[in-house]
Image (cartoon, rainbow, N blue to C red):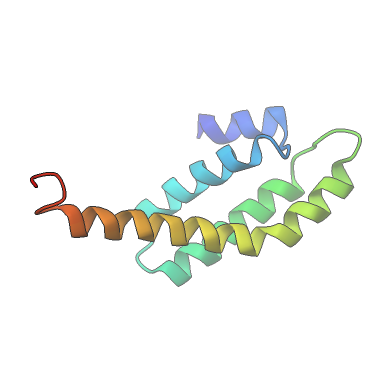
Length: 98
């Protein structure tokens, strides 16, 4: 909970958003069974965070841009995580032993 309180205190900026996204993803991935459900929950959580934090004098503009980018970012983040998991599975019995 403290990590999310830190987000609210500092606000979400373009620079901090990837860190926020990684934290949200990690927490949701642990508790959600399917990718579809996890993506939906991530979108809801990240949209809530964007809506309820202040990024300074250009908050509205930054929020609008981040919300438009959010679906693609969430999808790409999940694709990368799946690719990593697939690589680990395929290398488990031979990548490092040859």
